[in-house]
Image 1: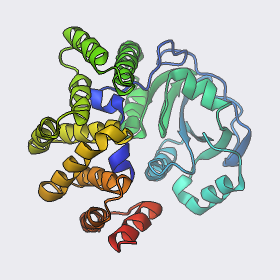
Image 2: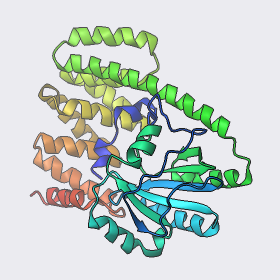
Image 3: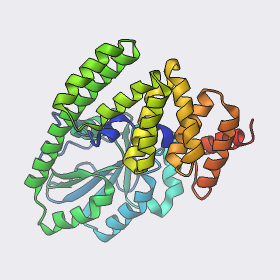
Length: 343
């Protein structure tokens, strides 16, 4: 749950996904790379993808909590479609007996071919990095050794049915992929440019940064990050101005506005000169908006950083009450419980 206050990166708040890097060599319509397996963990080893047939290649890791719910679905697909090769490939982790233990513990939940390819080498490079995919679980559907589709397993079954039926339009998928790829490149340019302006402000050149942001806004008037930066910078000015903007976002109460608040807090909290105003805003959240778990978690983190023990304790107690039905990360839960006791 620590991620509640820290997982909102700039890309998410811009409203983009830039998983695909420009210049991908693996995409729908391209030839599938060779399998690169260091060792097989379960099932009959597969030397190559079928020249005439369909295969699913899905990437996972033992540490990936969001991968686990898809094990049973992949197993069902493997049992349902006997003529489809289903291969789960472990990447982004060192080869270790814990991988074998994980597979054994899952039992029939992972009832398909399983392999280990390497940490950042092997298929992590030739499939994932080559397609610009930077998150797991990620699945690939391959037909006649041609990539058909790349995406999250949640959309796998519907797409597989279309590929099997011969109704899937791989050319349309290629066009969509290339369009996302171009958008991703543009989004990265925006992120790099705005981060540079933000760094200029926090390095002390307030006037220069404000002038650059003003110029940037002329060409990008609707980018949320422009408003986020402007509000963040108010934290080194008058408390009333900063507080007014934070309250305005909190009163909206929608997920986008709360995400903006979290991003603003993240940008300010590492800068000592902003902490007094940030502390005041955190108190406002605790006093009036503490029923919102994401906002409260953000305030709680501020209280811990500025060593405001009374409000750390109060916010920890409230968070434990809000998340009592949720399974918290053990380390974060222990931290909350300790703070709630005033330890």
